[in-house]
Image 1 (spheres, rainbow, N blue to C red):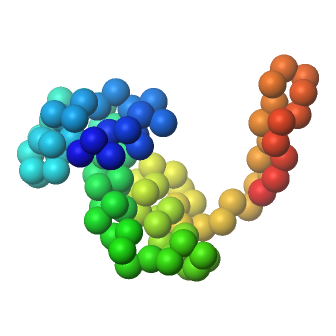
Image 2: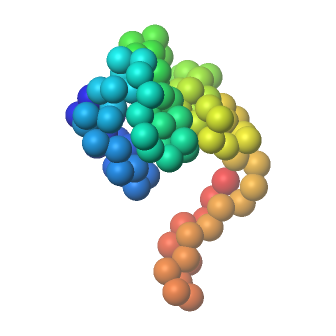
Amino acid sequence: MRTVQVSLAIVASTLTQQQITVILNGKRVIAPPKKVQEAHNAISTYEALTQWQAANGKHLLDAHLLMMKCLVKDAGMYRQEVLYIKNGCMLIFFGY
């Protein structure tokens, strides 16, 4: 529960350990639906970790599919658009 909660905090989730425990137990929790979906996805992904090898591209996409299910349209696929991150006028990252 703590691992899931800390991982979700990276993406600004405000779910508590108690709420994640409730979700783990298959019960309903009062929270934004997107945050509940993120929790379900993270739990499923952590449960499947032992099936995957980190250096395997297909496994990476399988993990992404589970983690982003019902959250983004291209879950489980490599990005096709160019991505860039800027800090003011300075380009910090550019890639696919």
